[in-house]
Length: 151
Image (cartoon, rainbow, N blue to C red; front, side, top):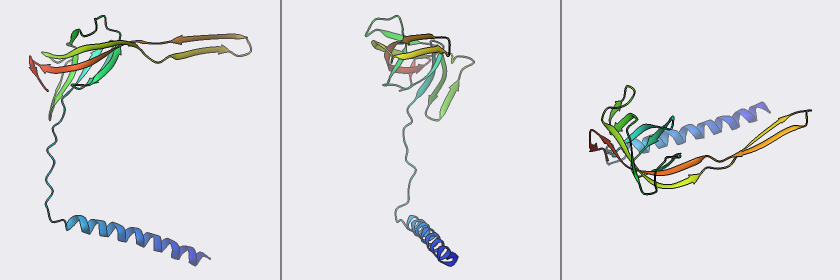
């Protein structure tokens, strides 16, 4: 009985090794040389907002803690901790000098409801509270360094 199992396992392992070797040989024999793709990296910034660090990219929207601003108003955040444009990154100490992120306020929203339930066993004490965080949805218009947009 052990001889049958060993023959099955050896046939499986040989099938795996042959498929790997054929895949390697077909990759090596391709006629066109492969060029590294030149993908344009999207710039991003890590910004401090309401005591949180948020990774922001242009033309994306984010939900931040409630900001006292009107809808369609433009806000500029200057607490930029890190900027990355292509292969070059700029790290601030603690903030990057001359860097800013321009945001457009899209809407004021409320986050999902969170239930806080506290119970003390054997004491007949129960307390149930709910909470919804006040949020502002913003769209990143541009990320700039020294007045020059990185888009």
